[in-house]
Image 1 (cartoon, rainbow, N blue to C red):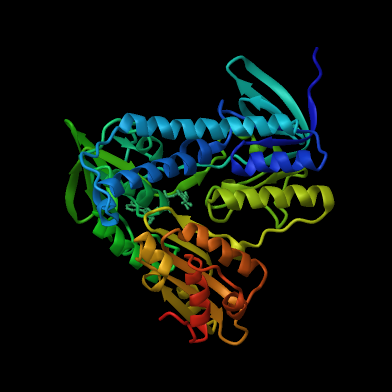
Image 2 (tube, helix red, strand yellow):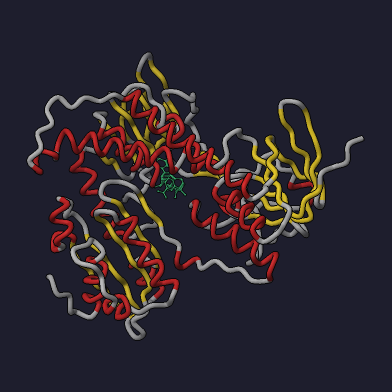
Length: 464
Ligand code: NAD
């Protein structure tokens, strides 16, 4: 009988949390294996999430620009036409290049790959099930990084076609006439933006009285106004209770209002941890009240030698949060040190312009009674934003009233997702607003808006 393969570490799941952890562990000299049920590596993020949506956001923005704003630059693009099939093909090519890249990284780092669904059998033991049957694998340590799946919405039955999730919204073969998006979170706004730019009527139904819950309210409001101008219709305070199909149309039912008729429905009401059939019972792991795997500060579950990171544990469901946790978990395992600074995890929504934030929101500071000073600077007063023709939005910096330490940075504006990196670094290093204000920022760049907002904390912005 063939002996059971044994590794120092078996990672379950090859999303950004799992594959990064596997590579880091291999760099540190461990014999590593990674079990992934899908043929392509990269998880939701690379296959059906962050990457394909960004490809479509880029393409749709160019289409929209060619149709509506290139003429502002003195460029006449007459008869701009959409080739949706080519756009989708480009998106697929982007995905396959990147997922193939991870396979290459695994090879380079000698990470053994098993394709199949992994289930825990007991301490250090897993079974991997594929089309050919089941086989066992052993790991001195096991890291669970199985990510999340689309959260269901009670009363709404997904049909994988007209009533679907972001996965379907990445592959519509025709531009919908009327797309109803349920949920005004990151997915709803990003995919709603794509199809709105390509010509669909888009209605976003949101349960709360605001969009982007969790983001700084002032910045979310700016984003909402801008998206409305772009054509997205928001109906807030709407609890969707069901969707019924009637002929070619879908009727989205909501509490206290007439149904909204449309031809496509995108359900984007959050995600839930992926823990089904993982064999958690076999090792005595019980889920918390929200279906997540409880871990200690070093990502250890209550089962010795089994760790968990990313969307299956508490915290924001973000690829880069999972990556940081994977690296911290592995480094701690090997060297005794490893840490994630949850105050310095940026959050970005890739609308146009982008919404980006790191640290505490103004509401959180107010509610906790933390004394703060606020500095803001509009893109309108930035030379590069003018040249770019993208002058909407502002940078807002919140610093502690007494120590001047930066507590939160919130941006709505051109390339906010790139600008927020400086703010995350500043928070990571415990910088004050004065530190940011005194750092030389190249001219003319959008980054000067961050410097000016830092100056504004002390009431001394130059260009406003
Ligand atoms: P989300 O949790 O960000 O937003 C869901 C929204 O749906 C909320 O505003 C909620 O109030 C609303 N909602 C819930 N039930 C409702 C109902 N019955 N009727 C109407 N509205 C309802 O979820 P998401 O946008 O689906 O994203 C899922 C996860 O993926 C999030 O954790 C998100 O951060 C992550 N994600 C991140 C990015 C990014 O970083 N750019 C992109 C996509 C997804």
